[in-house]
Amino acid sequence: MYLKVFSKDFDYFLVLLLFECLLIFFMIPPSLVSKMLESRISDFCNSLQSGQLLESLFDSVPGAFYFVKDCESCFMAGSLSFVKTLGETSVEAILGKTDYDFSPDFLADAFYADDQRVVRTGEGIFNKIELVPSGDGSLDWLCTTKVPLFDAKGKVVGLAGVARVIRDHDAVYADHPEMHRIVNHVRQHYREKLSIADLAEVAGISVSSQERLFKKTFGLTPLMYLRKTRLNAACKLLRSTKVGLSEIPVQCGFNDQTSMTRAFRQELKITPLKYRRSFSEAPKKRSNGASAVVLRS
Image 1 (cartoon, rainbow, N blue to C red):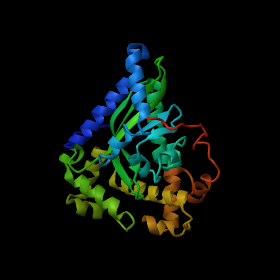
Image 2: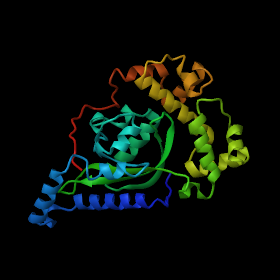
Image 3: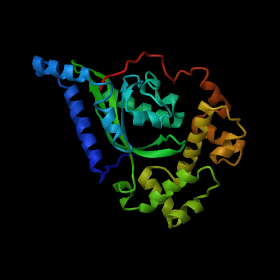
Image 4: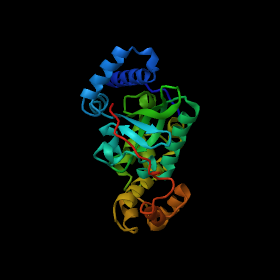
């Protein structure tokens, strides 16, 4: 779902402006840059600590981050703020990996499809509202922009993305603040027993109005959002812990192991046990082993 999002956060617009300027610069053919200027810029960038130009800027703006991928959707660079959303503590930990290493397939499939569209067409995707994993195991709504990166000959060699957590003062919630109350409630209480009626009561609207407005805003129903949030939390535990299969449903809000398995089959076409095993068997969709380098921003 695509929406044009306006923010009162002036710092974020400065980040976007600088980001676009940097992209424009890196896409300028070398023939248009004087040798003297090219040498001066190169010397300046090489004198900086790795990542200082972009990472320090993005890490200073709450809820904003950037990432760079190659044509196979492997991470080549990113801000530390982005790395933390994936549950890692260093940029090196994500290099050469893909979204499939950090997100359940129902999310990673969408990220990969958008990446490949940008690479294939050479055209950007702007202000897409999408669900992404949060560091605490829940799901955040982000506004994401992805643009192609070109080499000196004009060939697409990858893509760069910038994203921002949607906040309560954004246009997404301006007309219907009750949607923000629903999102926050699910994020904070998805481990508990929740019904659609409970969410409607939190929002202060009828169940039918809740269904209609939420789907219009985000492209899915509140129940689907709740289920995806619980699935993401379960996937995180299956990937990175040894918590027993009978305990995970309790920690993630499912009624029991049977209901969790049913949700996995519907969304991921796989059982929880097979999903866990897949992360020790290097499935074909995960990192392809491509080498990566630490890029200097």
